[in-house]
Structure formats: structure tokens, C-alpha cells
Image 1 (spheres, rainbow, N blue to C red):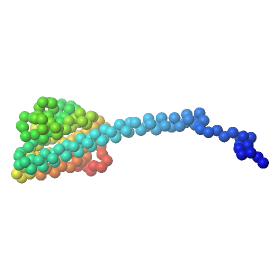
Image 2 (cartoon, one colour):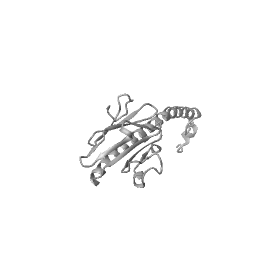
Image 3 (cartoon, one colour):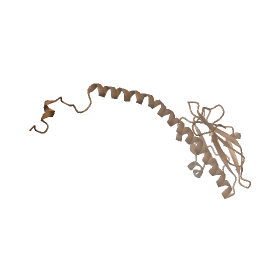
Image 4 (cartoon, rainbow, N blue to C red):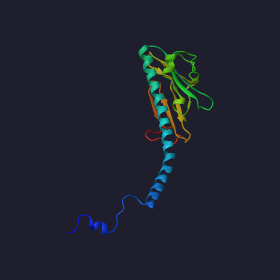
Length: 185
């Protein structure tokens, strides 16, 4: 009677693991896939920042509109940017001369809810709002109509459109590249 495993020893030796060519092919394929995926990952990250900035500005406008009606007090929302739109901010305010680009430019309660460009790196802002200020009138619930555009280097843009009753919507402007999940303006 043959002992258990004796036939294995006399037969062909089976190796366990991977051979050097198999490892090299695996590393080569993995490297290629990684090299192709990194630029796309960076683009997706920029697009998420663009979406975040537009949605946060829209939420800030709605919140300020609601708060002005609740406390029955006129409020304003500042949209300020430097010349190249790389430094920008959106801030609700009761003060007329509030400059949210300066750290000491607004009161403490306003600065707590200020959106700033440094929270959304690579996102630029421009607005067609008169003097960069939306005015909220609480008695009728009206607000200055206008729009704010956010863009990234790839050419993708999102626009926050504000109607006279304080409703906002985020959409892709006619000259902007499509952004998944948003319809054209």
C-alpha cells in the first residue's frame, strides 16, 4: 500500500505563489491603471468643490432670506471678489459697509456664516448682482434678483439664480461645460 503523499513526491512539483513574470505583468497593469485614474480623480475633486461652493451659496441665500423674514429685519448678502476672482466671499449682513474679504471687515456673527474661497480651492466666483449686494426685504419677502457664477479651470461652471421671491436654483450656464446632475439654465 502506498503511503499518503508518496505519489505527490514522485510526481511533478507544484509551486505555490506567483512567478516573476506574473508579478511584473501585474505591477505593469496596475501602474497603467493608476496613471490613467489620477488625473480623473483630480478633476472629480475639483468638480465636487464647484458643486459645494454653488450649493453652499444657494443655501446661504435661502437661510438669510428666511432669517430676515423671521426677525422682520432687512438684511443684505455681500458677494465680493478680488480682481481675478480667486479670493471671494459670500456673507449675510445687517451692516452696510461690511467687507467679507477682510478678516476684520464684518461683525463676529456675520463672519461665522461667511463662505470663503479658501474653503473651495480652485473655484472662482463672479456675480451680476448690483454692487455685489443682494437686499432682502422682510415685509414682502422679496430679494434682489440676480445670479452668481462659480467656475473651475476645466471650464465647468455652475450658476446660482435668485428670483425676486428668494427662490434659488443651481444650473449650468449656456456657455458652460455640462456638470452631471444639473440642468442648463
